[in-house]
Image 1 (cartoon, one colour):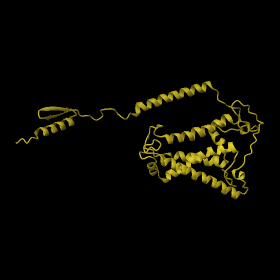
Image 2 (tube, one colour; image 1 turned 90 degrees about the vertical axis):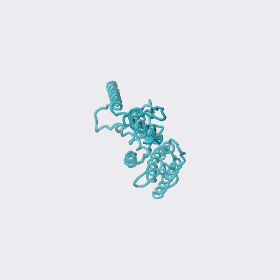
Image 3 (cartoon, helix red, strand yellow; image 1 turned 180 degrees about the horizontal axis):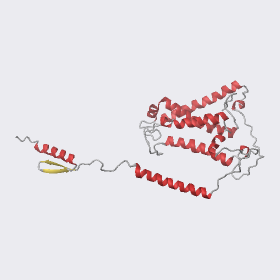
Image 4 (cartoon, one colour; image 1 turned 90 degrees about the horizontal axis):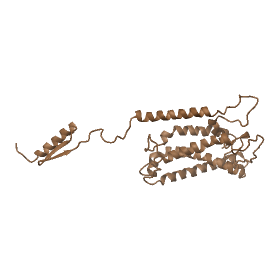
Length: 300
């Protein structure tokens, strides 16, 4: 057989294939020179995944033991704040709900009972159910970090810790007889009456008719949502490319395209409704405004 000069190349390729199949270093022979090329086996190098057992389960078990020990020591050293047996002839003042309902009871100071007890809790439940649909952030799935999920984490902190937990703290420590405000250390005088001249916003501007008051209240609330949606849209759209708030390489424009109008509308409504609670509380404390929307059926 004639030698056409490709013999060494063919032998090197055959040796490399045989070495790759066997998992041993490949030996290439070229012009009398021997070259060894290491072949990386599967599974070598740094693993980017860890097994659930024992790495995760072990840490969870240790934290469960720690929490159990803390709760046990706490329950043995601190007496539970139990009161006397219930007496139907003597109503306590103040009559407080369990601590996990004190947030709703505190909101009754600022909103109509139907709105504070039915509408707002429904918004909370529906919003929590819609989180998997509204949250399209591709980063941090399964390992939530503040750097990659600033908007989501800050929104939750504001809604839960700043609003809900603060309502529970206020209802527990600051609300005394008559549901009046008492500072820490102040004597709870059951005869103290807090005189507040609370007025409705339509009445403050001179409206006395139910129809005119309802139209004015709807206009104020509608204007709030229009301005709020515009500001929310402007804030998202101006996010630059690679901005950590947008979590998309293309910035705010790419986020709006991926989000879609339905997700954007629902998210904006829930976010503005949460901020509306803060604005209504500020108006009540600063200007003694009781309701903005006044109708024979519902007040907000």
